[in-house]
Image 1 (spheres, each protein chain N blue to C red):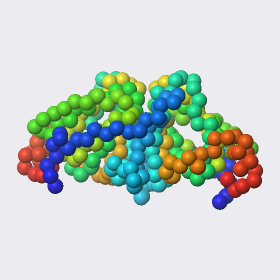
Image 2 (cartoon, chains in turn brown, yellow; image 1 turned 30 degrees about the vertical axis):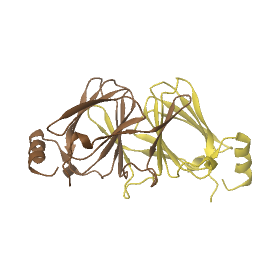
Image 3 (cartoon, rainbow over the protein chains, first blue to last red; image 1 turned 90 degrees about the vertical axis):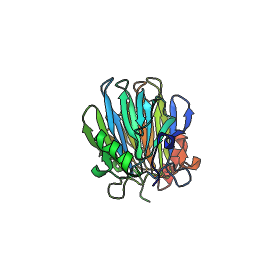
Image 4 (cartoon, helix red, strand yellow; image 1 turned 45 degrees about the vertical axis):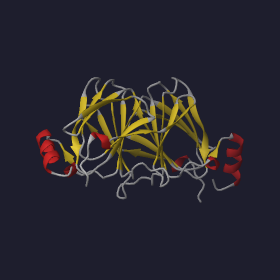
Length: 141
Length: 141
């Protein structure tokens, strides 16, 4: 596996049909698949200004989209870091394994949707920053 | 195919992990699948009090969940009708084909997520109420 860097993070735009609000389409069919979706979760009703995330994944790629409100996401590959405002349902980030994420929910109506290509597995999560640094320097993560 | 009635609509509860907000899990893996997900779309930023929907499907079953705010959904099988408040990410409705839906977005921060077992197909939509009534009385829809 090639080591993942911030350059591996992909910005993705979705089809948005605006008519009395926005209908946004997230392709999961064989033709339009961005990732094979094995798990969907959402994060909502987070108190304004609070942080979530603070972990990386060993195996799972995640497509993250903010459906309402604003979530600021900070990504780092241990060498470089970058911040994005997720604030529109038609804009998402496809984050490969080996990228540490930190999420700031800017308002309590913010809704994050996450499409995953890997089922839930506690071993997939790296929650210790020092373990992450060690893996990034010593492995192919 | 058996004619669908309101009794065919299923109320579904999802796993919600509450800790600095709510993480809600929508199973799509073979073990936990409620429907095979062929399409995901969301509806958001609808002006408060506006209606959407007003159609039925010929083939598609839909799992509808409100991730933030409140969406009132009115369902009818042409004989009986029923209203539900969708106002929590851990509560959804699995709606089979042949059920007319009307959605009222109660507030502009309301976010509806819809998981579909059928790809987008214009022929899947019944948008004329009289055609719907005719199909319900004369076919197996």
